[in-house]
Length: 191
Image (cartoon, rainbow, N blue to C red; front, side, top):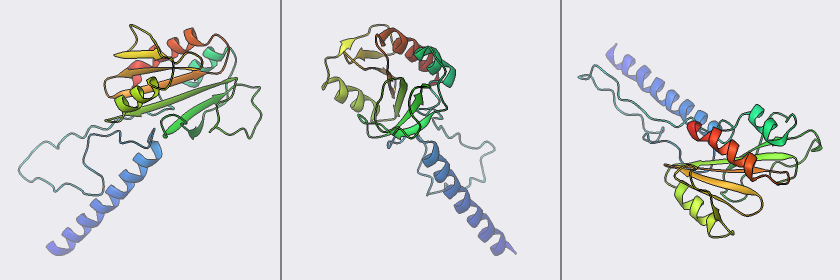
């Protein structure tokens, strides 16, 4: 009886670990880790002497959760369609792309186009690396008072570093700096 109970418990732990890994992969915002917990493939042994379970910290922020559809609409000054996931051209992760009504259906979310809002969030140890890497490739103009550090790339997007999270926001319309700053300020508490 005890052996069967242990087998069922082990099978349940493996199933839970696989489900957790799949959920994290589906919700991830970039190719980079956004958790501080141990890998899901190695379940931790149960403690029989502790009355309180250990806390697991998982960042739930994604490229699509730091800017809302209504905020993207306000930035473009017109309604936007539900977001699509595309490839982040700078960070190599996932971009969340909101299209305005003039973007034709079937447009690739992997390519930046006018009449859109692109949001990329990188969390974890790689955030500072990607933030600095892109800053070194553009004519970065510092934006004081926004996150821990922030800059405008001079033509298309702003980048903001807050702790171990980096967000890059690009609004595809002329004179986009002020609306990008507004989106970034709104996104900071969600990062």
